[in-house]
Length: 122
Image 1 (cartoon, rainbow, N blue to C red):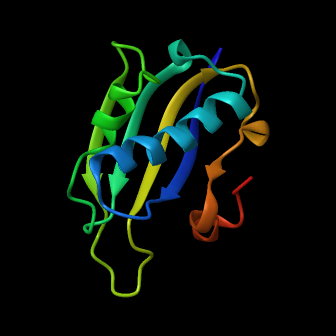
Image 2: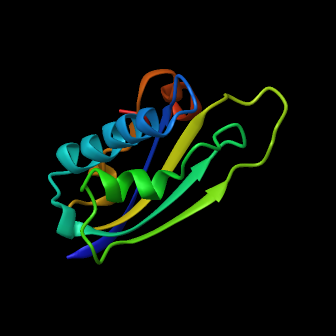
């Protein structure tokens, strides 16, 4: 079993805690499904959020919806405030245990956030 990194992102429509829960669940669920993982395969997740998201933290959303096991390590950080950057974006960097080779890891950029990494978005 190897440790792999999986990337992802999603754009929120509005800055509200319940909406953040819904939107953060989408790429996390897709990462698990597309990479054939269970919650126990997640080692850690680093979330970043753009500065315009202030109603909640993505890690709390992940814990609240039960996607991450109780012993999963989560941390949040703020994205740099770059003029013209896509607003209301949560990015994910998850470390997982998987037998998949790096070339088969499915990164998940949903909706408008797919424009952030066209080279790896699936």
